[in-house]
Image (cartoon, rainbow, N blue to C red; front, side, top):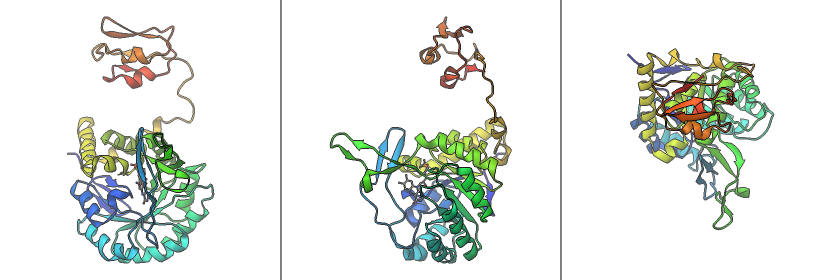
Length: 362
Ligand SMILES: Cc1cc2nc3c(=O)[nH]c(=O)nc-3n(C[C@H](O)[C@H](O)[C@H](O)COP(=O)(O)O)c2cc1C
């Protein structure tokens, strides 16, 4: 029997897939939709002491990603406290309220949000800089004023994210969320020579598949640096992506861009795909495979000599993708089977990564 249930800081989730703070959780109705479509817990849009004045346009799809110039919620905090959180709470799912940003704002907001009945806080950090002090002070402000768990969402726009993770742990955070969007970035609409984003300097922040490798690296590094539970976020679009984050040590995942592009059904779909993978592999719980890839991330290179891949004749369809991708001219499809010239092979691995049937392996 496969169980997707996870427990993080006392929050009981029916599955490890939740929305990330963003427009898909902009109010109570949107949160209810996420619950109906299979999310395991809810995270609401970041709220601050004042409603945000959001620049427009504020979203553009670019190759492999999404640029946004959205800020925090444009709804007044009072409305969240009176209506929106309560609506989301009726779903029965754990509700995490995202709040921002400065320590004094957190000190004011945190106890009011806790009183509204949410189950945990997520502190959104979204600044460029190498000094964790503002984050540490925000965590202290929250921990001094509430009793519910406090998660901290880390920005990738820093020199060493593990330094921030360690500082957050020392300051008393209960869990970490990684990562926020990457940037600032720029995209120009060449039809009118204008930036796609309507914010200052046309800047936007990158999310979606383009940032997934960065997010995954951050999660793996953080999981090796601290003992806190980590929620992975960044470019997750399907079950396989979510499984990668769990194998890198994440206890759960969040999804924003894929839910914007494909709708709230994505949460349940991802959860179903994780369950299917677990059945195939014989895993009974998320803990069975959480962090199992970490032991294969060596401090030293695996090797610095070439090892040509082997070809499994029973799996090779002779499609020729490996041959097309081999810049060393070492792979040829002969008689519908890929063959590797050991003398020419550099051992780069590109052919193994593109093989659609996994017929090539080291
Ligand atoms: C349009 C948009 C709005 C966002 N708003 C917030 C926000 O209010 N607070 C926050 O912490 N993160 C916000 N994010 C960041 C996401 O929660 C998430 O960390 C990031 O997009 C990476 O995940 P993804 O690739 O699944 O989108 C926003 C992202 C997007 C695309």
